[in-house]
Amino acid sequence: MTLSLASVTIDCTDAAALAGFWSELLAVPVDDEASAEFATVGRAAGHAPMLMFLRVPDKTPGKNVIHLDLLAEDWKQHVERAIGLGAEHIGDFDEYGQQWSTLADPEGNLFDIGAK
Image (cartoon, rainbow, N blue to C red):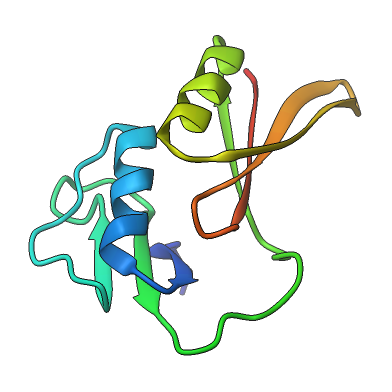
């Protein structure tokens, strides 16, 4: 018996708005019936894992310990695009033989975009 990754769930205050940010960044549609309480990106299109956004009354404070790592050959262009969509640029890194930028989405969840 094996496990498979079904979704990455992100706690937030406005599920539809945050799903919209990630939908634009990843060019994957927000699924129908998105609301401020619950939204998904990629389920209907068959993307795996899908992203699931859940409104919670109290987000965990501090740095999130799990985050998304995105890769692209033209990664710096994607960093600029993410900033244009509302992400905050946290810093640039060149370590362990990799280059990447750390950003925060509009609700402060960290993610990285790095060189492929």
